[in-house]
Image (cartoon, rainbow over all chains, first blue to last red; front, side, top):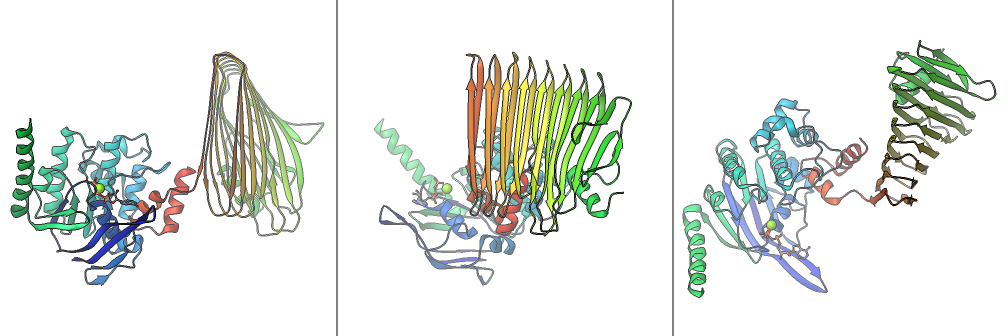
Length: 242
Length: 306
Ligand SMILES: Nc1ncnc2c1ncn2[C@@H]1O[C@H](COP(=O)(O)OP(=O)(O)OP(=O)(O)O)[C@@H](O)[C@H]1O
Ligand SMILES: [Mg+2]
């Protein structure tokens, strides 16, 4: 279980204090498949980075499986079982896809085992396993490799920040299946940040983050109709105007 | 004949555990330690100065020459002249390299002057590794000079590696390329402590359709200093590209000096240089996989210098 207590994250910009995450409280139960959504700039990625320890809290407390991890480094959190697939994957000169997957598993896994993870994200493994994770890979390819590194870690708490971004529509169906599979097979908690209805649709719970706060949090069946309702309302308003 | 320290040095510079196949000449502490010639590759000791001539017959294919140098005596200073005469239509691998072990208080220095005369249509792969070890206060100094003269349609691929233990290096590489000739250089360098390394390339593209690609990847740690100078002179229709990509750490100092000199409208010359610290996101990504910051750094540098 992950408990976020009164989290605040502020940045200084031009002598002004911007509050990005604003006294946020949230409890995420074990084994749940949760989708976080909300407007652009609402603070979703920031929240994910705070959980991974990539950004430092201004105030508040984080408890992971009963243990206070507020002061823990990225490495410690990773070793305690938190993983994070970044919205914008990083590239490396000279580090190969195989190397990255081996670092992710923490073992010298076989090429065949590494290929499994690539196949899971819809990449033809043998074409990619020996390639460098550098800028010669397309955005979508990097994104899939990023997802594969988190799958390879197989930790009890995995965060994916907009995994569908940059993935072509043909592969999108495939990706949904990947996440449905994760949902079925992974015992841990999965937290996906997404704007996609089809991903929202496979969630157990949906969380809406807006202005750095939890706007809504509840079972999918309750939250999704509300969200779609508001979208419909907007569409109707727009069609009236035209 | 070779002691254990010398054998270890050999292993570092030419990946040799025992005597290589093919032609070789091993120089240890200023003297010839072993030599082998083949039907196609002759090695002759110079009469007028220290060094050897390596003569490779026309049409020699799939053969190799190893000419490692090891220094394990503190205070030894030498300048050695090696000339390679490579015939036409050859395809050979040449492995050079120098390992210095200095446990004493005197500076040890090896200055190798290598000249390559590459015949028409010949293909050469040249690998040169530098390695230093030993905890004495004496410095380990290597100042290699390489000159390459390439005839029509010849192809030279050079790999220069210096990862550890050399206190001071001043490398000068000069090349003159004839029609359709190609020269590729991959340099990999890591400096630490107070080490200084300078690498100067001057490639003259004289023949029509000649081309060169000089690529340097380096990591400068601690208070070390690196200077990379690449000059490409385009005298005709040609293609030249030089690239310097450096990671700077701690209190290091890195200088990249590009020089492109085009003397023909059809000379296409490009220089790229990038110097920067390890990207924060790269460290963060690897740490989020469970690596410590130090482990992440090692992985990033290891990949970069691969
Ligand atoms: N270091 C910073 N300095 C200034 N503003 C910042 C900083 N970090 C985040 N922000 C701002 O905080 C807000 C939240 O950003 P965040 O990336 O968390 O949004 P998001 O919900 O993930 O949006 P999206 O759906 O577009 O990915 C944005 O307005 C962003 O510009
Ligand atoms: Mg975001």
